[in-house]
Amino acid sequence: MSSIVTLTTDWSTNDYYTGIVKALIISKCKDVSIIDISHNIQPYSIPQAAFIVKSVYKNFPLGTIHIIGVNSINSKNNSVLVVVIENQYFITSNNGFIDLLLSENQEIQEIYEFKIAKNISFPEKDIFTEIACKIINNENISDFSVDKNKINLISNLLPIINEKSISGNIIYIDSYGNIITNITKNLFQENIAYAYYAYCIIINNSPLIKITTISDNYDSVKKGELVAIFNSLGLLEIAQRNGNFAQMFAIDYSSPILIIFGDSLCY
Figure 1 (cartoon, helix red, strand yellow):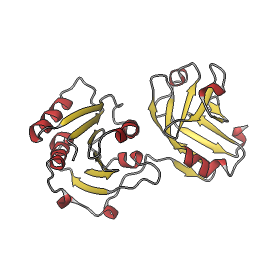
Figure 2 (cartoon, rainbow, N blue to C red):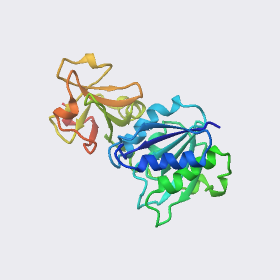
Figure 3 (cartoon, rainbow, N blue to C red):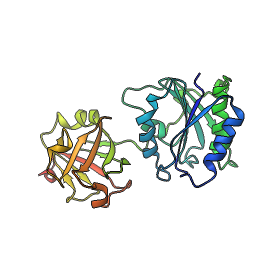
Figure 4 (cartoon, rainbow, N blue to C red):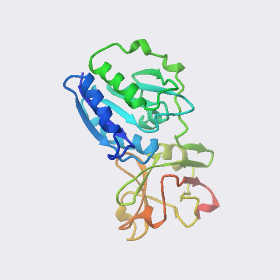
């Protein structure tokens, strides 16, 4: 069992939250290493947290425990999940993070559920640290196990597929102003590419921000023009060559992404 715990939160580094969680883990576990993946997640942004963790977790040793402290108090389903994927542990609120973390055809190996009592306002401190140390200390957490089929995973953050469109979300905006969405290459090909000869990508519901071609690389367009590619993670990415797309068009995490196929709007 690895004695590595990672932290991904939206706490920034100015508050005491990170310090107290680290202190509790060190107090309860022996010879543990704590690694900060990021504390700069946009407040409550589960998609951004999932993108960051998904991009890096496979580089950690097997058995690593990943604590996700983003939007942990969820009124719809007050529970904490411990999920094992590819022999790594993820401790998170049942808030949609796991569905966004999973890649296509990837399976959950084990899943456990812990209820959050109404009087707990800081589950990362009171629950997450306790679970992490039980795992590291090889204590049995199966007593808290719930049948996978009985756990209601929240999945309202996934792309919505209709007969002639895919509606997606922005899950990350990088330092260049490029936006990365939750629309995968496989999803696009399965629902669009083989059935329609025309498609367009409309960003922020604006007909002025429209792309009608998915390119192989950024150099496929002229400087200043918009370009859409599927990046190294297989996700739809939109950029402005030699420019800051998000800043130029006031794009943020709430901006909708819509791919329409076979429609007059695409011409």
